[in-house]
Each structure stands twice: as structure tokens, then as C-alpha cells.
Length: 640
Image (cartoon, rainbow, N blue to C red; front, side, top):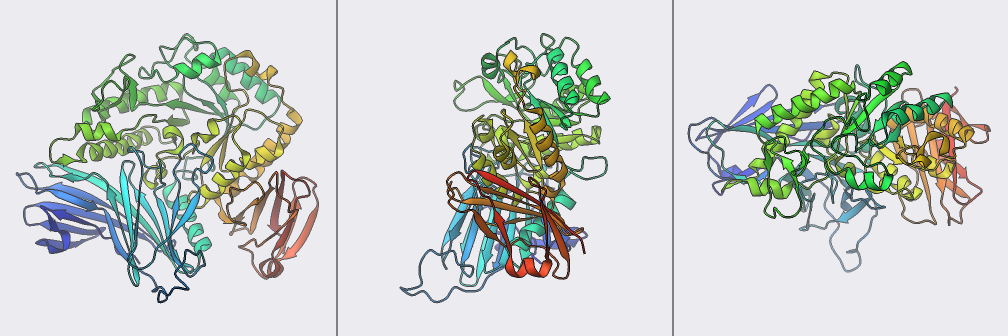
């Protein structure tokens, strides 16, 4: 079990040298310095998953300013690892053999084909590597999740902070030191001041990466994620996505078509552009105008009945309602409705962020957006964030108080979402932030990222990039979503998007070519494959195994297995890419019971075959795709 541990310097003195009291508490421990500064480390241990989680709460209990707090690391732990073999000219090389020590890192949501892709950093004794996010967005540039591993042993680590974090990894002779925190924290605390800082979540493992990441997925699913909790949906949504500038009357017509054709979309997703003061009536103009945010007043030019008919239609047909917001940003030229923060370069543009570090602004925001959620009777609240906050936070900080604006801003962001969830217990939150750029474990505990990368904003995004992203995301998240479309009818492309949630863009925009009757859809195909996706969707929250390395190459395959260990059923989803010369992949699926028998069914041909668990575990399974740019979906279940 990892012991929760943190560190900092106080007036330049290292933590271990400070005069302090350490008291055990029912939920962790407290550190009290001689001048009254108190840090409460509140920890939880989840034995079932091997996970330790902690968060630090800071209080200045005196009537005087505290000392200067610097080099603050909310996680500072040392994990034992076996020493490397003695270095010789022959063995000192970059190698990914299992016995080598390495830090597995994950790309951020950078609007690129390899978003969320993982790569290894090999560390020898005495070497260090570091990682950080960019511009105050917790999953931009680098994802805040790490696997530190050596020969099937290691730790999974999550940085719990939705602002600017920085992490370090140092390889000692027989250990790794891991420490991370808020990058620009260097401050004193005012009398009576209190706040929380970053959380840490750590999973120790000794039985291989696959088992470790599946234990992690179960922890996220069972403990962290709102999906599947009482009163919440069992999976993310299968949505029809529509631009906010599509008039309400036309929206109802499009949904009438979806219902008539028996397409099993379960959620109406209204994206940006539904608010005042917009008036554009072409796709091109609406695509340019949507950033003019701030009023959060329903636009009666597009929606004269304030969406009432659409809401009624959706409820009558058992559909959920999701609407996009971006409340932390507004245009000064549109609606400066509350106090806001400025940056050094005030001429950059007229977009600013609200002063969410101010508790009065938090109250205003909670009331303002909550009232719109109530009027629209929302099931899903989608929050975007298309601005980089770090320069605003640093510009606002007082002298010798670097990081305080960010800390209070992020703390109030958590309070804001918590308040919405308290007011609307049924509500689900979609964490967008420029397409996945604030995915971290703190927001995963309150939301689901339904659009985990803006790479899918490209209508011609590579299906192979979807395959890579789904494979990489599944390592860390049981539930997330992706955008798809607009064209239907390409089975390889559609299956490449299969993950916990999909937003279909076929009828998205305002121009007549996007109307339901003009979209040129093969409805027989759509019913078949939409139905297929709905049938298997639950498995994306179960155990996951990548059956081949996650490759960028178009000459390779992609193959994924999702396995329910409780009822011993699951799916294998495989793709032979457009230039792959290989008809067969010799895969080694996992999770089977040796003494059980399993029936596999090909979703395309209906053909079935049986294998025992012992055969599968010993010999693996041949996956055959005859044509290039082809896919294979095998559904399996235990029959004996």
C-alpha cells in the first residue's frame, strides 16, 4: 500500500526539516506547523482495486500571514523497483523489453491524429523525466495519467488537478521517486485562508499491465464515474448531434424522421449557437459566429417557443436532451455579465474568463446556468472551454501569491459542478474543454468526456485515428465518447468509432442539404449498424485488452477485446487497414476460464464456432479479414 505523502518548502526550508506536529486522523493525517499552518491529508484506500487516493487541504489558523510555500508537491512518493543490471557497453541501449524500467506517457488531446497515444520513456539509474500540461488545460499536450512499470510490476498514477500541473519521475538505483503538483505554486496564505490543492490517485500492481489497467478501469467505473450510479444512465449516450442555429421547427422534423426510421439514437445533442445574439442562417456563417458567447439567453430568432415543442417531442419518445454551454468565457463585446479576469496582452482579442476564483461569481454562475438547465429540462449539461486560462490566472496573482488565483478558480469549478449535481440529481455532465483538454480524474468523478478530441471535428478524420484513440483511451477510461460523421454507409469507418458513446453528425447543420430528407442515408444500413452498436455498447465499460500494439501504420491491424468477467461474455473488434498485406492476425484474447466453453459469432456472417477456454489461453485465436480496409466483430459468450 502506498502511503499518502506530500512535500513543500516553507520559507525555503525543506518539509522534512520543519518543526511540525503530525497527527493521525480518522481519514488520513494532519501536519501542523509551529506558526499555525495546517495541512490535512485526507486519504482513502480501496483494497479491492489496490488504489490509494488523497487530497490535501490547507488552512492558515493564525491571525498573521503564513510563511512562503514553494516547491509544493501534493504527491511525493518513492516506489521500490529492482535495480537495472550493471551498465556495460553491450547492454546500455534503448529497449522496450519487459524487464526494462520505463515511464509510459500519454499524449494530450492536441487535435491530432495521435491524440491520447502512449509512448515509453526509458530511464536508467540517475535519470529523470518530467511532464506537464499546457496553458492551464489539464489534458493539453500531456495526459495526466502515467504508468511507471518494470517487468509486470509498477504503479499507475493520476494527477488530480484541472489546472496547470507538472510531474517528475526520478530513477534511483532501486526505486523511482514520483512527485507532482501545481506548477506555479509559490505563495503565502492570508490569515484565516483555506483551500484544497491537487489530489493523487495511485494503484500498485505486481501482475502485469493488463491486469493493472483493468483494475484501474473497474475503480473508475465502480467508484469514480457517475455512469451507472443510482438515477444515472448505464452507458454514455448514442446521440444525434445538431448545431444550435438549426431552428426548433426543423429540429423537430429531423427527430420525427429519426423516430419514423426506427434509428436507435437516444439523445438529442444541441451544440453551440443556440443563444443570443446570433442571427446567421448558413452553415458557414454559423460556424464563424458561435464563439460570440456570454448571454446564455435562448435565441428566440431560431427558437421562438424556447425549445418547448422539441422538449415535449423528446420526452414523448423517450429521448434525452443535451445542450452545449461555455460559461467560463464571454466576449466583452457581447455580454460582460459578471466580474472577469484580464491578461497581460489585453489586445489579444475580446474573450475573457469569468473571475471564478471569486465566491460571488461562483454564486452568480451557479444560479444563472442552473436556471437555464431547469428551463430546458436537461438530462445532459455539456461544458466547453475554448480559452487558455493560465495567462489570466498568473496576471491576477498578487505579489508573492503565485498560483492562488488558479487554486481558488479550480476549487470553485469543482464547487460549481457539485452544486449543479446537487440541484439536479439526475443531471449528467459532459466535460468537453476544446475536445478533451480537461480530462483528469477530478472531472471524471463528476462527468464523462463525450467528445474527447477535437480531431473528430474534421469530417474526413481518419478512421484509423479513431481506432488508435479508442484503444489508447480505453487504457485509462471505461467510459468516454467520440464524434462520428457525417456520412453513413461505411461499415469500416463506423465500427472504427465504436466506444462508450458516439455522437452522429449526419443531420448536424442548418443548410437544407442537412435536412433529414436530403441526407442520402441508406436506412437499412443505418438500422443494422446502429442496432449492432447499441447491442454491444455495454462491453466498452468492461475489461479491455489490446490484442496488438497500437500502431500508426496503415499496413498494420488494430484489434481490441472487451470482456465481462462476471458473465464471461464479450466482443473482439478488429480492423485490417487499407494497406495491410496480412489476412490473418494470431491474437491472444484474455480473461477466459480454462474449464469453460465459449461460442463465438461473426456479426457479419452469423457463422458460429466454439472454443474451450484452455484452447484460447494456450493457442490464441486466428482473426481473419479477407479484404483490405475491412473489419471483424466477434461476439462471444460462455455456453458451458
